[in-house]
Image 1 (cartoon, rainbow, N blue to C red):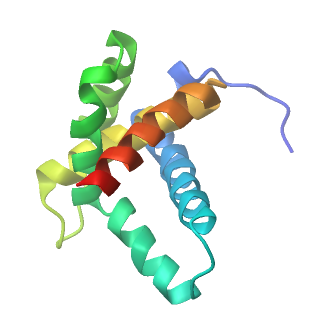
Image 2: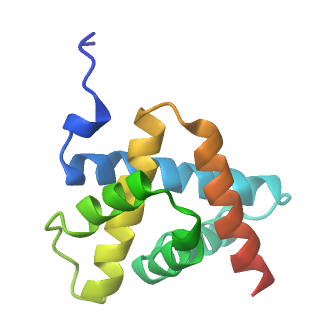
Length: 130
């Protein structure tokens, strides 16, 4: 292991999104697992409903009013980071999803777990009440 520390602000937008993809996926899986015992295939299908580009774009729309200026700037870095969407994804949704993942990656690497939980809680509460 390398002991070097790199400040999250020094990472590229796509590096932040790479980390954020894992963080967001873990939060989703932990949330679903806490919901009670279900077959793994069902949990996977439920997770896909949270982590696809369209769902993440909608998640961003739900938390956008809650974001600080700095968080908005991180989101924009990720959104404009140049990720190439797969053929089945809407480019606008994919860009928003990448921005959301960059924000989650930044917050995680910056040690802001409480803020991650707060934003994710809002995403889940509004998704499940819809």
